[in-house]
Amino acid sequence: MLPVILIGIIALLCVQACVHDPKVSVEVFYETYCPDSRNFVLEQLNSTFAELPNIMQLQLVPYGKASRRELPNKWYSFDCQHGDKECYGNLLQTCVIKYYPEPSQHLPLIVCMFSARNPNRAYESCAKKQGFDLVALQKCVSGKEGNDLQLRFAEWTESVNSKGRLEFVPWIRMNGKDKMYDAFTSFKRTLCDEYRSMVNTLCPGDTPTTQPIEIPQACKVALS
Image 1 (cartoon, rainbow, N blue to C red):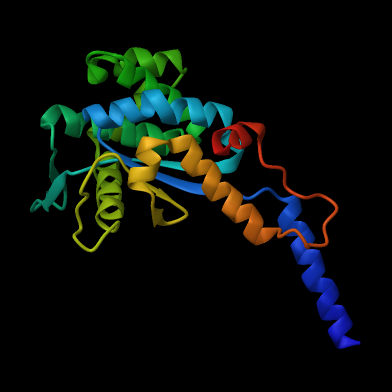
Image 2 (tube, one colour; image 1 turned 135 degrees about the vertical axis):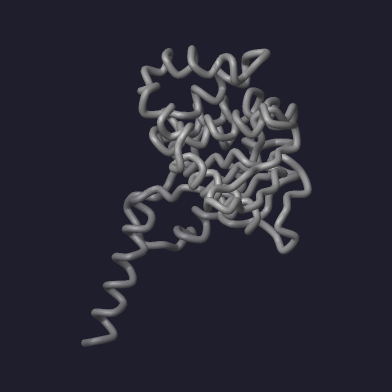
């Protein structure tokens, strides 16, 4: 009797796994004044997220090739690849991501900033366009909260490899695996390929389910 029950439980878990669509974990480590980061966000990430938001769990991490040092007052000082303006831009977007954590909220602002000749100068108008609370955001930017958030993103970025430093920006990971070169060249195709692999793992052809996961049409086209 027990084996029968166990088989039933396993079958139920398989059905549930296929009913609830999986999402690819996508981490993008970037810099706010990096031309390659700008081009990737504007030319690939934004359109792919708009088309396939339901198959990815997106996390943007504005830090890149920066370095840090602890100050006597327990604050941190950051040095960025493209200078102080980039450190400030990273901080602005760090606070936006904290207060508006859904990519559907903060990605439009990041796109708006990247679309401007001077991203930092465009920040306020971009935030107003999204209806963001500038008072709360400025408090984050100018206070310890923003500095602590930057430190968290610094540690996250440094954990990507044993060198503690990115070799290229933007650096892209999917489901914890480095997909940098494939994803930078063809983000949608790489995302769809990773999604298809997840679906095949969770719901192989012989899985007893009445609701198999459908590969989105946009992915079918990208993978064809």
